[in-house]
Length: 119
Image (cartoon, rainbow, N blue to C red; front, side):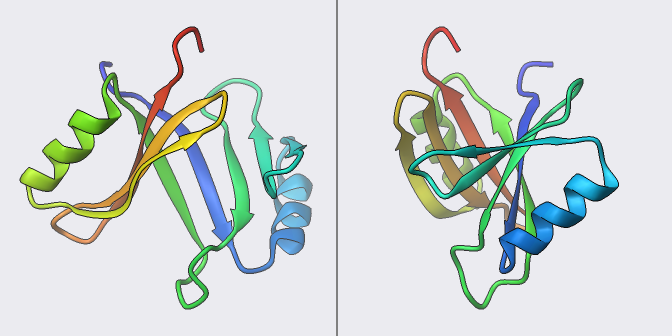
């Protein structure tokens, strides 16, 4: 598959409650990322993800999938020309890569991810 789902992120109002629930129901390894207020989810086999405090206070808790692309800038612009709304423009995650968040023309949100070379 040319553009696989590579990361799924939980945005939640109550991070501690979410971590306790998901660690209890599944055999996931949760790892805090120092200095980022972010928890990585290692699921073993398959696509992992992360958890963070919801950055939009009035938005309900949600899961946001990320899709890998070769060129984050071009893919974000292409989505916009196809009718998407850019919720978060291309942003660097130091030493890891770049992401953007998009809402498609029907209202479904997703992220794009371009890892740094060698990742």
